[in-house]
Length: 228
Length: 405
Ligand SMILES: Nc1ncnc2c1ncn2[C@@H]1O[C@H](COP(=O)(O)OP(=O)(O)O)[C@@H](O)[C@H]1O
Ligand SMILES: [Mg+2]
Image 1 (cartoon, chains in turn yellow, red):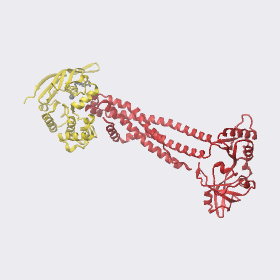
Image 2 (tube, chains in turn cyan, yellow):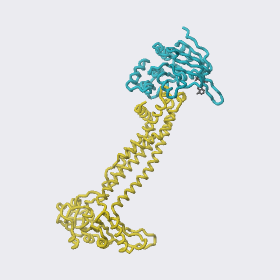
Image 3 (cartoon, helix red, strand yellow):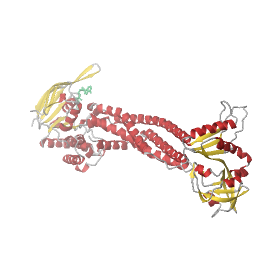
Image 4 (cartoon, protein in one colour):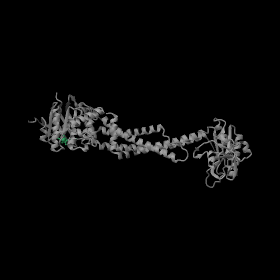
């Protein structure tokens, strides 16, 4: 069974008199352990797709089954629980809590999962170690470089052992050397069994994946294996 | 998510904006400080007054002259209340146990080379029993002393000290120019309503006239005790009728005297203090309202400022109730902080006031109910004014919140 299964997913925005079809009938299946890059021009619907897959947003029509659960039937609070358990999100702009320690940021998903303070501390420290930030745990996020911040974000995404890691242009705000470090991290996480879904418009970043999907005006126009 | 976790988040958020948090809670601080300050002073006064008058007993009564306020051009009738009135009352009104005149004035007391400004009080032999005072050394003057107009005196302990009288019994001192022989020393009584009860010289009523002059006899106080606490009202009314006849007050003309009983004093003071408390409660209500609106305002600002934070929290799994609780607890913490500071401040004000007011006011009393009330009100204000901003935060759409610039 596919981990992610989208069928005829549409996301339509009404802006004034105009109708924007951010997603226009997307069918997509992703298996557990996949490493998929979503590509396409700016405004083609990549982020919208990620938000739907990450249960941050609901499709206007169509069905989405995640790990056997029909997501469109869930309440807002149930969606929150799914985000907490199943999804690890990494954003282009990091989205960390400012003036807050790296460790506390990584603990956040565990806090809402109701994990005890002691266990939270241990698991967050462990996740930070896995992204190579063992020596920066007690730094405030604004004391960290862009690459370090994104590592904290990755640690936060994986701390609750989610089914999928979603990354929306995770290297978009980073220089190329730092981008390579972050991509090496995703490669490693994929190798250790994680499902990774990654938005990018840079071909050499997409090279890291095993499968590339191209969106154009909200439609899936290409779905190919990454050539080796 | 558990409350303690939210409490830590709230404290951190408030600490990050120390100045703003402080200013926001000002309304609550002022409100609670006013409550506690006034309550502590009022409670102190009440304790004091109750103690003061309860000691005298319910069958105690004071009759004193009352000057009438008259309109312009009206002839002022001289107000008189004499010991003759007192004797008439004693003879005509049934149910009076004891009655004494009381004349009061300051005088210079001298013994050898020592002089001391003190208060002289002219009374008869029944005064100590009427007032529940007793003599420590020697004796009080008796009927014989009064009838013979003996120049005797009973002194308070402070007078003994000031004049270095040693064992004062039998010693002769002068009051003004009048030499008197000391026959007794009163027991220690301390302060009462700003009056030092140990700095008094008691002399027979007729003897006091020799010090204050004959005219002083036209305005005396009468102090009496009825035979029972049940006949107070009846005695009072009979005295009133008798004095109106004797003073030739007719028709609707007001009394030129005043009869005060203990119950009334207590009732009046309690009423007055109640009014004060009521007025203050009104002011406090307004202060708390203003404080609450301040909290709501700042919480709305905080929710807007932290829209992104809310988005982040939601994206990692925070439910509506988690966000609601977070901001609600922040609002309540804010107002409770104000309550706690206000409590300390109010207590300080109460203490300061009781220290500044002369006389022996008891220390500021902050009753437990006032503390509970202060915190209860703060919590209620926090919840009431915090719920709207918090629910606004909780309802935010995660995508919109994350996109918020
Ligand atoms: N909240 C919104 N309201 C209206 N239009 C939106 C909204 N979000 C996205 N869109 C539109 O949907 C389209 C797809 O956006 P997006 O998924 O962000 O593109 P990408 O990430 O590929 O650049 C764009 O045309 C964008 O303007
Ligand atoms: Mg995008």
